Amino acid sequence: SHDHDLGSFSGGTVWDAGCVVPIPDGYDSADAAPLMCAGATVWTCLTEYGVKPTDRVAIMGIGGLGHLAIKLASAMGCHVVVLSSSEAKREEAFGFGASEYHVFRKGEEMKDFKPVNHLLLCGSANVDYPSLIPLMDVHGSIYPLTVDFSHSPVPLLFMNLKGIRIQGSLVASRNSLRTLVKFAADKKITPTTMTFPLTKDGVESAMQTLRDGKMRYRGVLVRE
Image (cartoon, rainbow, N blue to C red):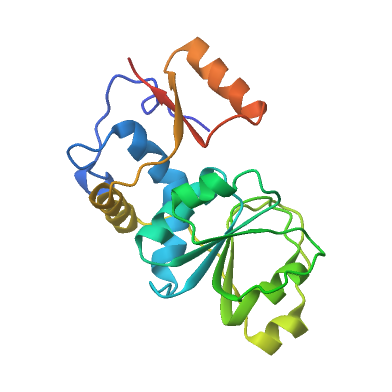
């Protein structure tokens, strides 16, 4: 669907003041843009479902969602545990604020792994819940943030034995967005982005970077 009166390429638009999110002075609009989507998605999990600063919060997948989840959870005072499919992003994860980094592969046992209270799934939409249950503490919560239309079998018996919750999550309310942007500005948290000019060539270059899997970690189109 589309509306020719509202668009990324317009010179201006008129909105109800109650429906917009003020960007704090000194915070770059190019940094604020990814917060409106990826940032909002993980922020809802971190603020609406009982996450406490003392909790062990695991982030699976270091990408557009995951890198922001690490930065935000760390700034909130959580003990951030990063789970990735390889060692490639270990140093980067610690730079984002991770406290632990583990290579996780489906079907492999995680030795000497202390269970987590919350697990944000920020990578593949194909979720293998049986392999995740051993990672969770009693009454832990799993948040599937990347989804598709395929079905993911859920091992109810093992979930019930530990009281584990699978929690769906909306992107964010307007109040949540305002809180997020203020928090990010106060804590000097910025997304890791690649910028492209808001032109035909810039859009095509950004899309090709995305298709090639080389976007690190959010692409932002910027008006010159």
